[in-house]
Image (cartoon, one colour):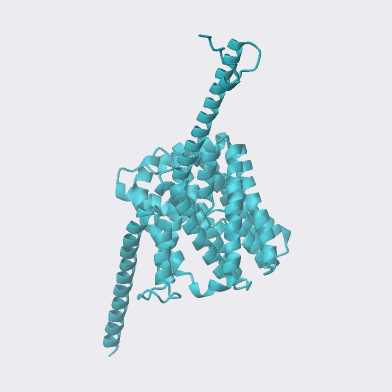
Amino acid sequence: MHRAVALAAGGADHAELGTQLITLGLLFVLAYVLGRLAKRIGLPAIPVYMAVGLLASPNTHVFPLDFEAADVHLIAVFGLILLLFSLGLEFDQDEFFGNIGRLVVSGGSYVAINLGLGLAFGFWVGWGTREALIIAGMTATSSSAIVTKLLIELRRLANPETPMILGVTVVEDIFIAIYLAIVSAALSHATGFWPIALRLLLDFAFIVVMFAIARWGGKYVSRLLKTNDDELFTVLFFGLALMFGGIGEQIGVTDAIGAFLIGVVLAATRHHGRIERVTIPLRDIFAAFFFLNFGLDLDVAAFGGVAWVVVLAVILTLVLNFGAAQLIARMNGFGADAGINTFVILQNRGEFALILATLAVGAGLDPRLTPFAGLYVLIMAVIGPLMAANSEQVNTRIRKRRARRLRLQAEAAAAGEDAGSARSQLGDGPVRSDSEIDPAPESST
């Protein structure tokens, strides 16, 4: 009897697992089909994965599949970790440390502009003081995951402004670590100075130590990674990415920052190219899980109550980011073209907004923060990649107009020089038109 029950339970588990695998496979096939269609209009894969997750969300009821977000949550965490790990691998230490003062100032300016006006917007909404603190954090910083994916997908890692963008992203990540500590203290009603100060000190120490190892310990880390077995090598770097993501989470700087920092360290080793080569396929598949999982968490029914606030937040974000991007581009010696590319990449909002919304729900804050974060990030995640995918065409048109204007100015200057030359040949008097010149007297016949 007991054996029959156990076999039945085992059969049910196998059936459930088979259903989940079929469902997940169908979601990815659907993502492929929609992704092919999206590529034809210049839309990157990110919002496609999110839209597929939204269609399959248990809150949507428009997709004939029953799939819970919790089933792919851990795999989605792998995706976030590998995205930030890849970002660390692409981080140019020489470029960053050679311009660290300028990058810290420009990145700090970018965050300060968005945070300050985001906080004012949060108070204006009127949901509460702690809610305003959450909204300010949501609108203040870019999504490292989406920024990384766009830079890779649009093949802009070699662009001259990319080190500046990555530098700003690093400053944002450091700010996020500090801000999370502050927000966690505010939401827990903590009043003790020393516990908060100790946590912030630990966050900074972890970041400084990891950058120091990357800067001066590359050759020692290279010895630890020495192996000719590609399989074991892949297992090792994947394990390091997960382990340091976990360390970052335990310390309080988030798993994403821990993965980023170990990526920075491994980028300083002589195995950098080999790691990057085997990381790419893993990163791409797990990143799809991350964005699909984001869509699964959304509830469309709750969007209506916060729609007008989200629209205002989107407009505010676009305006502020355009001005801030042009400012930091000029601060780093770049022109308007690089400013536009910086704007369309850094305006994307994502996982940090969702983290803050989760903290807000746990602290019992206004429940409207969750649909606000979901709709805000979804809109920005669609607008951002679309604008980023077409920014080069915009820059090309701007360059053509600029060249045409310069050509017309040159032609006008040349015409002025010709007129001046004609005046010099006729003397100092004004040059008269043909109608003003006295006609020659007619000869008498």
